[in-house]
Image (cartoon, rainbow, N blue to C red):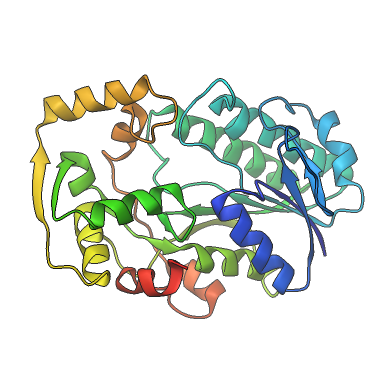
Length: 296
């Protein structure tokens, strides 16, 4: 198949492209129009501004399926979250319906139900539009909702690994208490390959999680153990200082820690892995094996 992959240079997108190419597909990877060089197969696209179906229709010529793997953690001037998560994906989905590209695999996120953050609201809006097009019979979409995605090259994974190396660590309370179900980025990629191959007819929303949930604090402790270190001394940052640190992060656009992040960590990020495991044909990689299998 000829597959248009948005976000192909990102952490998840890069892994998806490699997996899809190994499966024999031709991947047309989306890259920033500001990129200095375009490699064969790369397609310029701007998720900050390509908010109309007309902007996407030329890129869909000869395309059999679309995989949307673009996402941002927080709103910035260069990558406004409303455009990146909602307006541009909706335009892309509308273009797919007009061009007759029925198969769409959309990478969303777990834990967005009931959340009032802009991250969750914009993610839900794109999902709702895609589901409406599916109800009309114009698209055949699969929506993937991964928990914390772990792997080499991921900014959050690198942060977790750096924290795991500290012999004495000071953590905000929500970071210690939030329940997550970490998933290997390679397992997520294998699921996308299945949805464009053996499970081509499967539609709907699929939770993508590892086989077992645990608190974020316990996950970081497990990473430390996998690195061969003794248990760390863990201190809890008082709530007022946690709130203050998040507000300070709001003023630093490059920081992954901000008020939105704090709000998202206030709820669990767990799900039922049954459908995910059926697509994989096995259980997902356990969190205790992630360093050996995904940190490469």
